[in-house]
Image 1: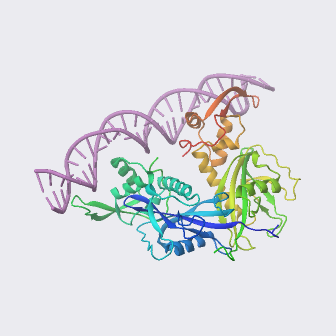
Image 2 (image 1 turned 90 degrees about the vertical axis):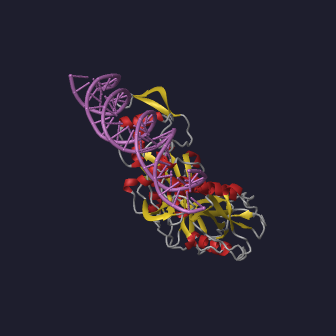
Image 3 (image 1 turned 45 degrees about the vertical axis):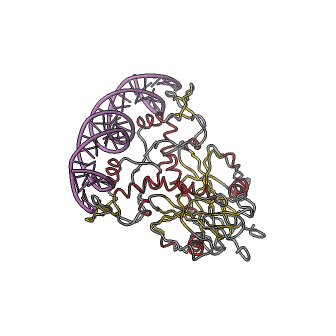
Length: 224
Length: 224
DNA sequence: ACAAAAGTGTTAAGAATACACCCATGT
DNA sequence: ACATGGGTGTATTCTTAACACTTTTGT
C-alpha cells in the first residue's frame, strides 16, 4: 500500500486572536505570492515530513510574523480542513490552530508579508476560505470562554472587573449586566483580589484582580 | 517553497460507536501487517493525494470493514494527531473521525482483518495510541449528547423512554433518575410520542417515541 | 395474585434574572 | 460641587434535585 503512495500537501494555518481596544483582533498577513497574491490571509505554510503540526505552527508564526509561540498564552488545535476547491493549486489538507495572546507587538517591517492585527469587525477580503476559518475560530473561542477561564489568555495578568467584563463582552459579542456578572464570576472562585487599585482616569480607582492560575481550567458555565 | 517539499504521510482513522446490549461498542480490526501485526486497532489507512479525508474515511470503512458510510447516522471530524513516536515507521499525521450508528451488522468473514465491535469495558490491547483516541472520542460523545440530540444516532428510529435513558446511561457512564430524566427530556420538545406501544416482555407495554428530526440539533443542556 | 417494568408529582434548595442607587476620586 | 466610572442588594422566577408509590400487563 505504501508503494507509489503520494501524500497530499499538508499545510498549517494559524488563527491568532488578541484584544485591542476591547475588540477582538486577528493576525493577518498580506500574501506575497500567488495564488491570491496581495490578498490578506491567515499566516500559514507547508508542513513538511519530519515536522509535527505544532512545530510547523511555531515556525510559521516566527517566519511569517516574527512572533514567538511563547508569546501566546494559550493555543489549541482548531480543525483540519480539506482544501479541495478552496486552494486553486488543488488538493491540500490544512491543520489549523487557534492561539490567544495579550499585548502582542508585531514588527510589520521585519518580514515581507506585513503581519498585522485587524479587528474582526473590519476584516479585509481574505484569501482562500480564511474568512470561514476565522468565523469558526470565533465560535470556538466564544464557547470556550463560557465554560472555562480561557479569557485569562486575552487579558493582562492584572485587571479590573470592568476590564474582565469588557473582554467577555468583546468575545461574546453582547453586553452583560454588571451586577450579575460580578456575582457569578466571583462565585467561581477563579479570581484573586489584590490589594492594588487602578487609578485609571480621574475617578474612583478600581480594585485589581488576578486569576489564581494562568492555565486552562474548566468551570461551571459562567455565561449561558 | 514547494520545490523539494516532501509531505508527511497522511492517514485517516475511524472511531465507530454503536450500542450493543446497552453498552457502547467500538469497531476494531485485527492488523494483518506490521507494525503491530495481529494487534487490534481502529480501522484506518493512507489518505493519498486527490482524496479528501472524508472520502478516505468512507473508503477505509468500506474496504477494511465492509461498512458503508451511509450506515452511519452521524459522523464528524474528531481530531488530528501527530504520530511522531507513535508509529514506529516514523512521522505521520492522522485525521480521525467519529461515527455513530445503530444496528450495524459486520460481516467479519469478508475481509482479512476481522472487523468486529468490542464493548469499551473489555477492549483488547490496542496498536499505536488507539486506546487514547478512543478515550478522547468517548469524551467528545459524552459532552455531545449532553447539549444536543446526538443520541438519536445510537438508537433505533422508534424507542421507549427507558431505552432512551439506558442509552444516555451507557454513554455517560452513570445512572440517572427516572422521573427527572423524563421530565427534562420531554421538556426539550425534541421527542414525539407515537400511538404505539412496545410489549417487550410479559409486562406493561411502554409507549414508543421518535425524534422529531433525525438530524443534529443543539439544545439546552439535558444533563449537566 | 404475583412479578416486573411503566408511569407519574411534590417539595425544597439553589440559580438566574431584572433592576437603581450610593461611593470614591480628580478636577 | 460635579462628572465619571466603581461598586453593591433584593425580590422574583425558574431550574434542579431528591424522593416512592400506583398502574398495567402476561403468566
